Image (tube, rainbow, N blue to C red; front, side):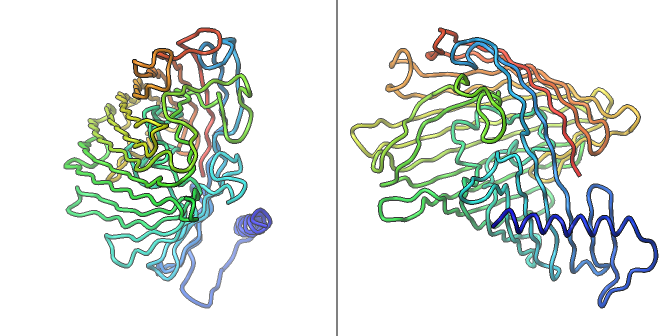
Length: 431
């Protein structure tokens, strides 16, 4: 049913786009005059800015090849898949209300049961600069997560996020978030979310997220950014997959939708367990973030710590921490865009050559859990080197390539490998 309604919505939007291109003349309305924009998608709005409607989207087509620890037998495997194929519909109604619907045709967001939505939200902006947002959307946790997937530097976000993947994922839940800014340099948000998982009484898992940012410098090419994040959820009497696993930067090992390495794909198990109700209690995560940018150069990093408390003698407390550090430089001189609390796109100054960016990122994560690992006395650790290049051909097209090198301590695949190599290329189009 969702797909039928969505198909009708898309057809109507396309019909409007075609009619706007096919006919010339005067457009009349029974209210305010209309403004039709076609740069970066199709947008129709009233001149008094009380109503607007925009159709956009993003397409990310990936190909990856990898071996060693990334496969169970150590042999080379590959994957070709759509990482994201979003149709994005958003706008404003009655001035103060905003809406956003992002549907993922690649099925890497959402689920079959609840629809493949990356976001479906309504926001009230009548208390500007404070916003109240309701619906399905990712909780705020981390600088790199706050940055749109269209404009993150590497194809995949850092592996340290895998320590607490629930902290910044909607996981088919609904939430309410209040966010706002002050003095042009402060930003904060607080959200409460109800996730699909239920306890023995049918109570959904409740999650709380907090984020605060201080950015005394907050312009493109002149950024100084600091932030702190906290997320907590209660797992009392809840059946939960408490395994902490990581793809170590190689999505092709296992995708939610599209081609992957299949049964031969190998993900690192760092700790935790797929546990019955009563195994775990409180689950919390902290993160600290920092960034600095000057002209075409930028550096950023985050530190994450997670504490999963056991509620049964049959299970143990699980503690983990991780971080990443990234440096990037635009060879053609453009600065990374920045909006308070997050980085934005790079706009090529010369459309004939585009903008060229090179980067390096180091990810590290470690988990203490004596029930997991070759030697139960040692922590399981994963480390990832990412070296890549991005070509922003224009404002809509971005081509990327990254070499990924991972090493693992206290775990190995079926072939005895504890390191792996991979290469990923992506073609991206946004509108």
